[in-house]
Length: 394
Image (cartoon, rainbow, N blue to C red; front, side, top):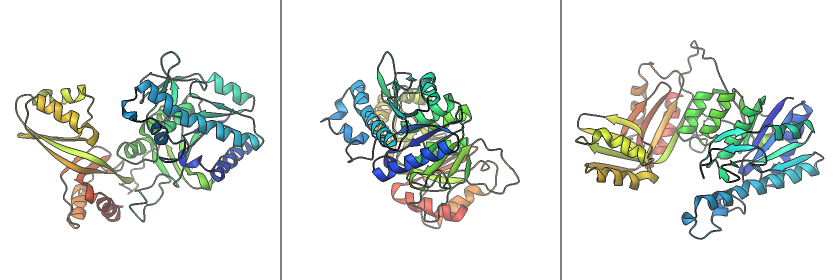
């Protein structure tokens, strides 16, 4: 059985004409002798009737809602979506079966709001496929302890799709969205951003981790674990259109391409902590408070790092409890350049700094790894920085 998984995001299922494209893509796959499994997200975005954020707004002061109730509520969006999509496909003459995450055999580690998939009972879906029934699976959810519904975090339908692809030994996972594929930069920021035809798992993971929203980073991990190719496609253009193939790519070191893509993440805060007693345990205390830190620079007289804005108050509480002196710089953005050949290539940092200096953009901090170079700039300079770096180095 040649299985493929087709995943549709919220903006790919919220209009009848887009759901018609789902039917066309499914029909095309079956004509090619493939057995499709469809995964869907909640319909639309904030403000639309059944979007995740809209469901949350049904409850006044939803921030006070307990995690179990929150997961029950937001899981409804995907369930509604899978039933609506299933009915449309049924009218087109196909046998279908809408399934919640639990009904699809998806088991999680039981953490409300941010679960990991730990196992999938594939016998449920395989039995349907053997009967030529198309499973329509509600993404973003699974079974925690007992019969508890737990969700996988924002963007979790991507995770559902690639996990299913991995457990089912699928030929590929097709991610349908409202863009043409993985781009060298955000096309809303960079006019001449172009589609990346092929990209390695590691590179797209870095892109997703550092701000690009085309695919969830944990989804990439599941695909890589099962060595399942992922194809990112535009829903409105169908499965025959050009897109991006994410897979394991053997590096060709004769290729002169150094950079793959550039992305950015806002709502970052820089913290400078003066050196002194207690510095050795600072990172442990931050970790114990579930605060993730990044871009760590350690000097003789101070330690500098960044955190997400949402963790600022928690971080301040930790530092002040340790009686440490510190400074905070808010409203920052992290720009990251990704490329498998960045490490060891001379002159790259100089080129980046020169490009930004020519636009009078202040760089507050930098860091690099084998495949990335990151810089911290003011939020107001984020889009300008991405545009100028894309122009100068791509």
